Length: 260
Image (cartoon, rainbow, N blue to C red; front, side):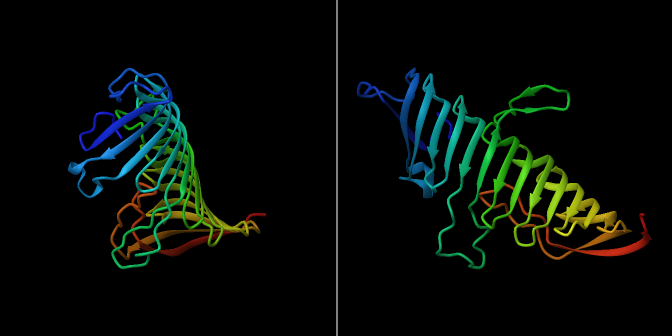
């Protein structure tokens, strides 16, 4: 939340019992507690309350602090100028039982992220903030999903980017490679028995020319084509990325290579 928003009232109450009327507009440094109360202009969120407890610099969240959102999400970590920046842990509230599984209910929330927020290093080696995007995942971090899946690797502007590994709990397979805008582009699809596919990916599945490599050393070259099965879904609140478009990937073999 910004310190100057118009849809809520921000009250800072310090540990030193300040005079009556002391608010976030004052030049407060040190430990403190704050309450955010949403007013009538916030629509459906009117009357809801959020809290922060931690350190301040000139009345803005700075240093380590814990922020509890009205939906039950809890962030514990570093702040700078009122925004998340540096290492932090964000635990998303689990979905409510009521409404689960209902048609049109949308993606389930939940899971947790622990890693970096804020500044990244650009292609020219310059590190800096991202024009107000300090509140999103940037840098190295791990997201543990509600279903037990886990991604560890790079993030940029809140989405998977750079080198990373996604582990699927249900079949113990892994996607290891290069990611962009939340989706894997090139890399390996690795199975528990050591077999893996290497090539390009789209919509979370193989696409184009690639090789299957088996534990005995044999390789099967060929290519995948994709057939779209559904529409792209909206992003879940716990992830911030839209899931891949549902597609069926069809394999066509080209040659078998035997490696001694």
